[in-house]
Length: 629
Ligand SMILES: [Zn+2]
Image (spheres, rainbow, N blue to C red):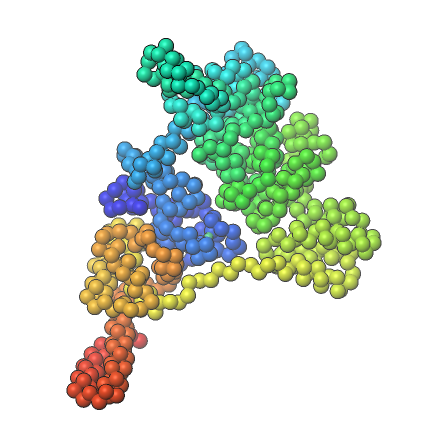
């Protein structure tokens, strides 16, 4: 967490969370200081994700994700706190001080990630250099035969992994230690069981204290040999892995395409090939073209269609769908579900439907993939085919009709059975109902009963998850005090939040004064939250970054987000007055019980004392007055 005065808190003060979150989520102004949008952390159709400019925090009332600008960046980029601080600082152009970490493990993990990123980058340059060497003539020939220009080769940083297993190792071993090399996914090794005798003989011969380490790195050899190398990058364009396409013709050389294994920086299911280069175009054009292979992707991109990405032959994952949805929720899928990757394509489409993407399907003539199509027929033919792409459900209905001729009742039932599971994945009930109608029509279902059944089957999908707003657990007065305590020191608030406000009015300080003096919140629903906020105020901590439990976090978020009424000194005074009354009413209530008790015991002196106390409290009540209404 950011502590006052440290670098993170300096960065936080300069960061505008609305602008930074806005780079990932389309935000709409929803109040004087708050903005809302579709949550990037869970799937939803109506916005429950809010960002507050004044308090510089976000909260999702759907999945309960929330926090400050760093929490947001950590979560969406899947990085550690120090990395998030660094990233936000970079966005703002604030120079980084020497890095400090909150724990040795954190420092180790960050160092490891840094080392792994560096070694991938180094390897990428190495492969690019190798491609220019005389020994790589056959690799250049292969790329030429695939129609790749020198410009595309440079832009995609395509390289060549030499036949020798040791060149890469020798190129990087001075710069990187053994652990990083082993974890990079670039090398293989044989773990030789060495007897202690053999080992000691070896080191005696070598005669150097580093001999053990040297011996270890010597055992490493390149995983990728005699392959054309395609780097795989993060969304920011950092190399994290490779795909190597073999140039060997014999069977022994391993698979045609070899991918880097999963490493601490590379998880196949979270990466989309070419997203780094395509993201701006996807955002601008508001749709993405999804192709299967990397070569398809490079060809389509080089043909000038910049909004193309590849799934790299595996089924689309939820993480990938979320990643893509930050740029657009419209997608044209250009792979043929009838070919080899049919099952993966089918799963990808199913997932995209359930993640509420607007999908079109581009079907090229049989036997053509995008790469071949562009090279044989030209870019304009491909662009034309793209414009002709069909809505996914139109495409499915056509397929159903082709598979199950619907002239007979049996055919109709089979076609329906084929379509139903697809329809049921659509998150929106309204859309499902429309689809059911459309299908009845297109399949020629005349029977009203059958139509009704179809609509029922389509719409009676398991009930959608209801995202309830936090219950009104706090009274209006408590809500005002929570807002006051959570309000920022005006000196640190952005200019936009200061406009039109009384500079002498410090709601947090005043609320703190009343509450600590009189403990007016004692014993009520908001007590634990208010106590936490009081402590935060005393210690100068950001009230929105407190380690609260889920319920309190929701409470404070809902109170701060609903800023329809301006927080004025009058509002605060009225709230305090109302809390005082409530406290007195409660004491009067307690007295009533005590009085009954005393009377039952026939304790006259106790009764007299209680009655006296009651008079005092009633006077106090009158003194407070009716300022509350
Ligand atoms: Zn959410």
